[in-house]
Structures are given as C-alpha cells and as structure tokens.
Length: 380
Image 1 (cartoon, helix red, strand yellow):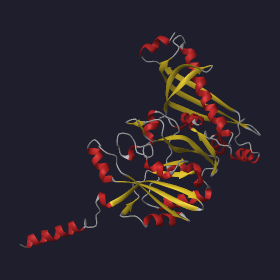
Image 2 (image 1 turned 135 degrees about the horizontal axis):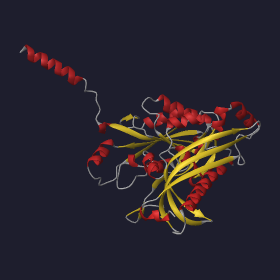
Image 3 (image 1 turned 180 degrees about the horizontal axis):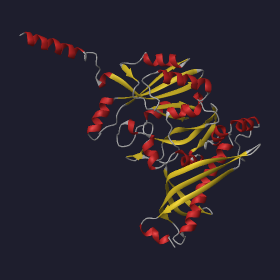
Image 4 (image 1 turned 90 degrees about the vertical axis):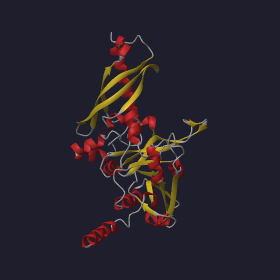
C-alpha cells in the first residue's frame, strides 16, 4: 500500500507540470507584421492564422480556404500602436511564428526605421531570419491575399519567397539579418524587394484571383532611400546575388528574338581598378547556359554564345545605369572600394563621384553553353 501511495504522489507531481500548457487552438499565432506611418501616427498590421486548421490541411486535401485574420493598431509610437492592438485581442498572442516583415515607403526613413528595429529586435520571440519587404499597396489587402488551391497562406510568396526564386529568379529575396547588415554598412546599397498585388494574371473558375508578386525594389544607401526601380530594371542584380540564381533570357539580335537560354550557377567577382583621383570597376561573370528554344535554326554555336553574352551584358548595364541615375549601387561597387581603399572612397564621396551613370564599368561575361537532344545539331 505504501508503494501505491508513492507512485500516486510521483505521478501527481509529473502531471502538475502540464496544467498551464496551452493547446494550439487557444493561442493566436501572428505570422506577418506590417508597419505604416500616416498623419504622424504609426499603424501596425498583423496577419494571424489558425494553426489548427493548417494542421488539418497538411493531412488531407484542403476543401476550403484557410481563414486569414488581419489586425490593426494605431498610436503616436510603435509601443502605443501595439498596445492598441492588444486591447482588442481575444486570446494569448504568440510572435514566435512571424516569418515576414512588410514596411510601407513612408517608414523607410532613418528615424522611423530605428523604432522598427528596436521593436523587432527587443522582442525575443521574433527571429532575425524573417523575410523583409517594402510595399506601396494597401497593407490589409496585402495580408489578406491567399495562394493557389486553398493552400495555407504560409505557402505564399510572403512567407516562402526562396522556392519561387530558385526555380525562376528575379529580384533576390532578403532576410532581415542581411537587411540590417547592409543598412548599417557604409557605402552599401540595399535592394529591398517590394510586394504588389496582381489582379490580372490568374483566375479561379473564370474569376480574377489576386496574387502576390515582387514588382520592383527600394534602393537604400547610407540609411537613405534613393528611390524605387521596377523589376525589369533590377534584373541584373540576380547574377551577382547567389549561385542559386536560375532564370531564362530571350537572346536577341537587332531586336529580333533568336532563342531562349536558361542560365544558372553564376560565379562573379568585382575588380577595383584604382587611380589617383578616380576609380573604375570590372565585373567578371561566368554562368552556365542551356538552350531552351531556338527561333532561328541556322545560327551557329559561336554566334549564339556571343549573342547570349551580349544580351546578358546589356541587362546588367541597364540595371547599373538605372540605379546610378538615382546615385544607388546595387552591385556593391562602392562597398568594394571602401573595403580596399577607404581614403579614395571618402575622397570620391566628397567630390560626389562615388557612383554616377558615367562611372567606368566593364563587364566580362562568359557563358558556357550546353545543348540537349536535337539541339546538338546547332554545333557546327
């Protein structure tokens, strides 16, 4: 009998440790945080998902859309806006699942961003690895967009940009930790991807379905927003961003399409050529190309290689020119100069010649073309 009582006491002690546990359905999980600033007031938006519903979707084919809740709080500072949000909350809130931070253009100012950093960095639950975006769209509409096939919103571009980028690369996605690193770095330019709601490209049962896309990027240099460029003007940044870049380009000759080439595994380097009172740069790029389509079958391999390299070079030159017009530097040329010769960099900054559209820049592009199947007949 004594042994039975001992077992009962031990069991009660073990069970007592679980009394304050919360079930999934008893907690509000915030998955995205948005911040706006209007009329001298901060506006905080949060996206909340029902993880219990999401767990059911993982085990079976979803038959209805997962509910998306969007919260909104306002205040003269971010702490006050957060308190305003909490006053109407119905359950305990968890910030440990925030995977995206979205900022409006009005927040991209040093004095406002410092408060954003303070809020997100001091909150132990929010991680540094979340994705960060800018936007010019309405935040509530942005957070309410759902992906294809009734899938969980966690499978959208907002929360999983890397999968889409690896398959077909446009503007590289940016994690908060890398944003902070470049934002605080002298001579560095941050390309902050901007999210946009597209209403024209996809339909569901003949009804237009809004979907998220990256339509451009904000260029921030020395903690100052230099401007915004559309996606087509920032395509050159992908070739220096990551070896995981994978994209197709249309090869043209005198504005006439020759074929489409899939380019992948780019390897790049930047060479700084210093002079007493000036500097020039050389970007070397090696990339593997695979023929995808040919519109003119009579062209030879050497000519196709040359045209591919020319097309790629023009794309990179266009990005540099467009960015240099607003004194931005998405290729980090100035950062390379600052690290190798800070005195010369400082001198050029004082002369306002750090970066401009006439900065001498040379592109050495080498494309290693490969052919599949019958496309080998091109090799003559």
